[in-house]
Length: 330
Ligand SMILES: NC(=O)c1ccc[n+]([C@@H]2O[C@H](COP(=O)([O-])OP(=O)(O)OC[C@H]3O[C@@H](n4cnc5c(N)ncnc54)[C@H](OP(=O)(O)O)[C@@H]3O)[C@@H](O)[C@H]2O)c1
Image (cartoon, rainbow, N blue to C red; front, side, top):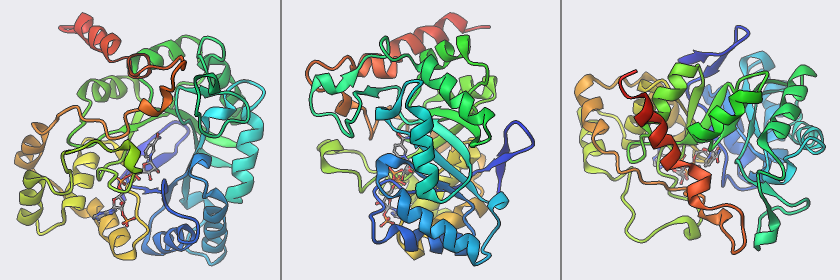
């Protein structure tokens, strides 16, 4: 399996298993099957409400000798209700307890969004707290402390714009190893790709297959299909591969990590085999022009009336655009 180097002689496997929406009652078996098939990277989060069951699968898989702990890469994330210096340690300990692990390979800030204490999902504006009140730099310092204690090997972020990465760089002692963001042919984010390459930050592509099972409330009418896209289909036929394998291979060809979610044994196998598929320059050029800047997980769920968060200050797209504009020609 291809992997990307990080600090301290470690490397992150280029393909991992996503677990958002993997329901209780099926996720344990899915992770067990994944480990049997050869997956060595599992992407988790307490917000997915299934870490305890994943922990059972990891314990069983390690106990059965499917792999060693050192061969396994486990990522989890700090949920939005646990930002702030005094909350990170307890949240991480709960995740480690659920996953039945002594340490994580990677711990990510799930969103640059803060909830009030005790809120699992915000319903009203007052359930959300501005970053000016609970700054990312304080939460990040708490993640750095967890790393110092050996509870996590690497730390990183999700859904961060270039603006937020630049701000973090001003106070961080340890730079983020990873930014996990939505990436697929309809949302290629070339500016972020260039930025992260230059800074040595690995990008992980979430929703690489189009997240077809995400909640209806996150879907828009007449959305473009990724798995059903005719160009992806033609390239798949050319290589006698599946559309999913083309999408995953494309992500890995861009040196990003891909974390497709599946609970189906056949599709788990199919997705892992994408690591063997090599697309050629013509394929990459054809996919390169499919970008529509189309977000599937667009963050509008953090915009309850009275919320300090807007799509503009969540994604910072105008700031990032100007940042690139100013550096054009450098
Ligand atoms: N950091 C963040 O904010 C964030 C946000 C979103 C996602 N993520 C992470 O990224 C992971 C992946 O993203 P995602 O779950 O949104 O969506 P995804 O992996 O793009 O798509 C999952 C959907 O594709 C189906 N599928 C899987 N393999 C397939 C194949 N070979 N052919 C056809 N359909 C296939 C799955 O169904 P079956 O299960 O039935 O196979 C499921 O319906 C998540 O699970 C999570 O770990 C992180």
